[in-house]
Length: 537
Ligand SMILES: [Zn+2]
View (cartoon, rainbow, N blue to C red):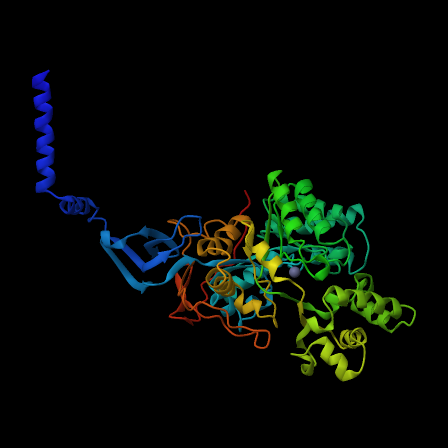
């Protein structure tokens, strides 16, 4: 017993002596020597010394990111390894994050036009992947569009949604009519084909004609076709205010579509539109939380502006007046038997949008309108606002910014963990150039409403997961190298309602599929984006 105790104490003594002779520094050196020196890490690109926010809920960490070809091959401390890189980007003092993913854009034309296919307005916001075809308006000839993008080159990655409105228009025209069984089957076929050609899901614009003419059952049937192909359902809901069924009933309709078609449902640009429904963000969120608790995958996206962007016709003209298309709308406007009813309903709609001073013209064939409110133009013309609006509709319509949201609702939606960032970018509205940096500047850094990792996740990983875009949206070994490096002190939107087409600032580097698209704050002209194809399970 004594002997054993003596042996044990002499071992302890030796350990203690060793610790004195070889302090921890030496131990660390020995460990470093054990690192695989022979395996030299050869990189195309090394992003060094930045604070990495990887898109998950993990805490920010100072790390280096190594890229080879189009993939992330290393995340960690490169100083511990033998690393060689063709180029090293200095990210000291910068935030390194996954490239942002925008779930709702109107970039179809921009991407298809070689003059604007670089998508610079989005790259400068840190967006490396856009989804387009929202609001029911996506093309059903998906393969054709994807091939065109591949042939011409695009600056960001881009994914498509097939548009319910387009499918409906193709089979039923612009009328307020229900489909026959054969016509519904035809619509399902077009939708299935679009999915098989690579669409990630289906969008609806149930607020707009002709989507508004569809009953919920029709949408459920088409959504089942999409669900069978692992796709998602994205919607501009039937009513975001008090126009028809109301905001909350529209959320219930969306949830019902999710439940009956067994499909993840995504509410685009969630908002409480107009004073009638201000404050309903709380009830809306409660409905969504209940549905999520019941196993229905409901998510939403949002842009951080109090004005929406639309056109004067969609904002004020009732849908029945649009049935059959534009020629019939113009006839109804002229018809003395119809016009009084039209005017009365448009007056109610204008009130829903907070009146003529809350409608700002942002783009029109008649340039003299741009930058003025409907109220101001009505005064100039000595006509009522609705009569003025009808003249403008007859003259070909116009784009507007409609100031209809309350800041309190915007903030309440933004704090929800299922709400992601989506620009809904359209020409004439600053959100197309400013959404993502504006959220960082205003709501992370100025108001401190949300944390930076929360905002990054809501702008990247959450969106990629929701739309089932694999291997993007996170900084993780094996993932595509879509990476942004930005300065937290200077990142900001600069686009305003007066100057909506002003590029954002603060993105130092934007890497798309391993290629540098923004270098030291300037777009390089690189067309490194990919036309993304849905790979069905
Ligand atoms: Zn929309």
